[in-house]
Length: 146
Image: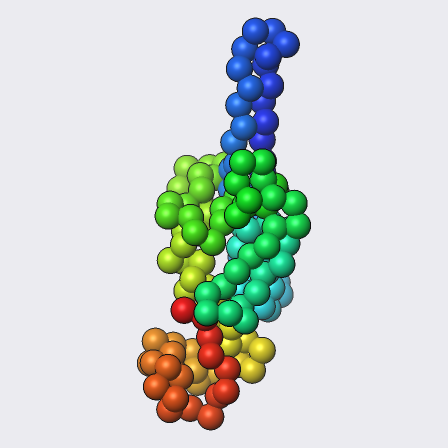
């Protein structure tokens, strides 16, 4: 939720806040979302509307409409890829993801085109699978962003 309170007409201040609001995660419905609907969705990750790319050395996000004063962030976003701290939420304890959490989420997302199911063996020990990939010890030709 991008909230702007404008009380300037009555002599007050204008305040703008970006508040993370929850959505249905993995286990709150009868049918779970598929992995890509979160791990590869700029909207679900709180980045807003734009183009998310995992094809370079690092993930990149290009907002469809950049936020005023912050070209890295979409106008409808709660966070951005370089966020050191998570954004605040609409309830106590609710927050967006920070830079490290977004990186981990997107590293799984990068593998989803070939490894679609959560029970795929690469996810049993994902750190070990990423290490094997980095050493070239797999048949995989994809090189996930760092």
